[in-house]
Length: 161
Image (cartoon, rainbow, N blue to C red; front, side, top):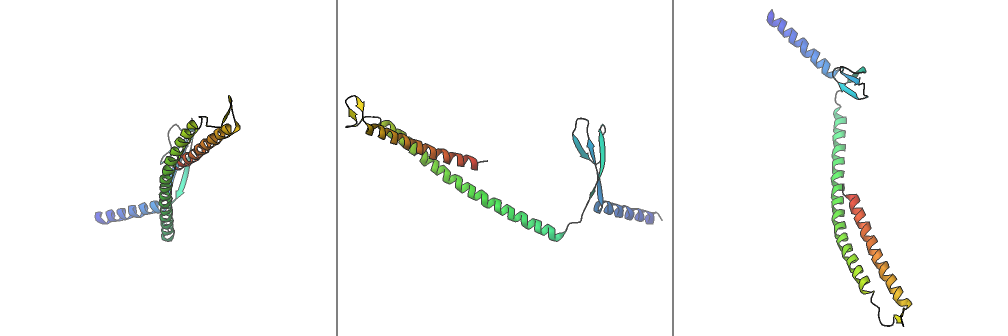
């Protein structure tokens, strides 16, 4: 008799537990006096307002689950491809930045060397127009390579997290 009663009680508990798992779950939303909102299995003491929420549990749809897994795999593959492309572009920008730094250095040296007055660029104490044209050209060259370097560095900074 005791064994049959025990078996029936255990069976009833198993059915009740399975029904509770497959059915719904109760969660409480408690709003605290300071404005915070807390969620839990029981109302929070001292809450200004507590609301009982029912959350339905749905059985997993195998087709939907498989589609979600495929989408996740595709997303992961795309992220990896994007990361590889980003890393390759960063390496390329590193090389370009190195070349641009060298070009800036050379343009600065040329500008400094170009400040010397060459033969035919002076009339008495005055410098002729060709001297000033050459100075302007050297400054423009330096400005151009500096702008190229700035563009490379800003793109590189944008690609880094």
